[in-house]
Image 1: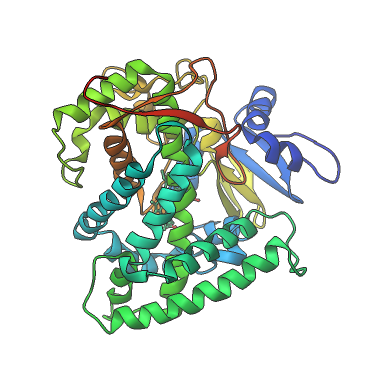
Image 2: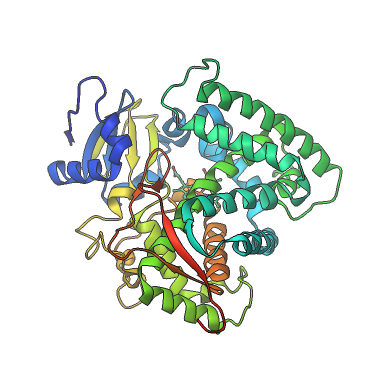
Length: 435
Ligand code: HEM
């Protein structure tokens, strides 16, 4: 294992924040599939081989803590969330959470996602649109209406504003509550959001189970048939809002940006949509949207919304033969692995057919394509994320053409949260009878 030195005090922090993709690629070329980075004062050993990724996700000897890995970034704002729990405690909470992600629950969310998406698509102007901002506004409404509940009314604004402030604080490098600072605003927002969610849990429990995620969680029972304490539900819901929001926003924006630059793929996708004759996307039928599925996979291969899976080592162990001592930090990195030239053909090129049955490049190793992680912490919202992305593409492209600049590659800056490196302006045109 080789260590890239970086600058003595800052280490690789600045290049990491500026362009983590280029930093990983440079280290891979220089050091191979295992190297260390020094970011925000701590050394992390990064693994790019799928054998190592499998060992990290499966963690058979329970030596790796997800809580410890994520604590310093999202821990303070989103403590108590699933990714900030480990082992038995995580398992118990994951089982309760599964109640809110069962098939019947997903059916309900999917129906309501259509309503939110249709409303946003109807509001789109004809002409240039900042696609990232438009998608972000849409997914924020999905979060408040579908996850927290449609009956929020004026409180929806409180949830939206609090959540935006908490996310801004989570990615702020300055973590001191100076008056007016991002950190102080995040803390205030967290207190307001938690207060409101506590009230809403009580309200949901006083009524029968409704189809929103908060109501599902409020009625979920653990294996001794007990309801979760309200504080734990509030922690889980806050975390789900975080886990769902920027990830889905980045995915959908990336899909639209690529479809806008590639008329051939847009035509394939539109043909698939037209063949459905207006039928809504459902949990049962979404797998039939094969071409949109390929575009979805290619978007999250090239720009994984969760580019790293950090873990704290809690007992000395080895990862794919490399010793890692207790107390150290390690990370799997889909950001590097998804474009590793030993595994993918023309890895930087947008080419959804690489996932088709004829080539199936992702199947070369069980843990090569890992946009949703793996093992105990596998993304619990993976199906919902794919369905959400498909609903947006289907409802938008059914009535609109989107055009981007084919000469301008789509580049997303991966950290602290994935976002377009330049404004993502797409030309959106309603399809009229004559067009
Ligand atoms: C394309 C969109 C998404 C991607 C790429 C994604 C990716 C991931 C990844 C990689 C992890 C595991 C991280 C690790 O092991 O360190 C994860 C965990 C998680 N995700 Fe997602 N996610 C997405 C959307 C969603 C959505 C829509 C939800 C909920 C509605 C969600 C909820 C969660 C939760 C609760 C966890 C923690 C699971 C656990 O620790 O047991 N995610 N996600």
